[in-house]
Length: 75
Image 1 (cartoon, one colour):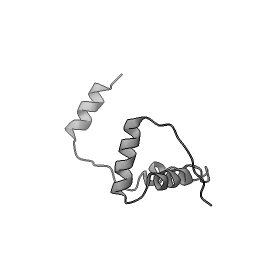
Image 2 (cartoon, rainbow, N blue to C red; image 1 turned 180 degrees about the vertical axis):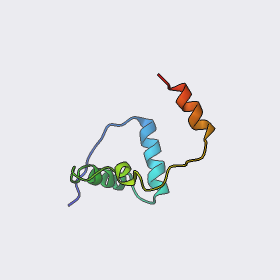
Image 3 (cartoon, one colour; image 1 turned 180 degrees about the horizontal axis):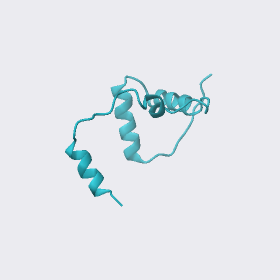
Image 4 (cartoon, one colour; image 1 turned 45 degrees about the vertical axis):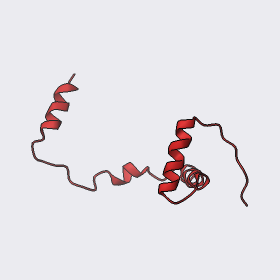
């Protein structure tokens, strides 16, 4: 059974959400339902980022960006 829900949201967020819904060929309600369903699932399930951690080998090549960031954020 579907029930109507009214939310108060910043206008820019509404505009971005409508664009996303259009891109995914769904409705704003559909996006919210999908998000809510995912957010309220079993909390024992690891987050997506944790499930992907270690799936690809780290680059062993010298990366000047890494060196820069390490120097920039060194204690």
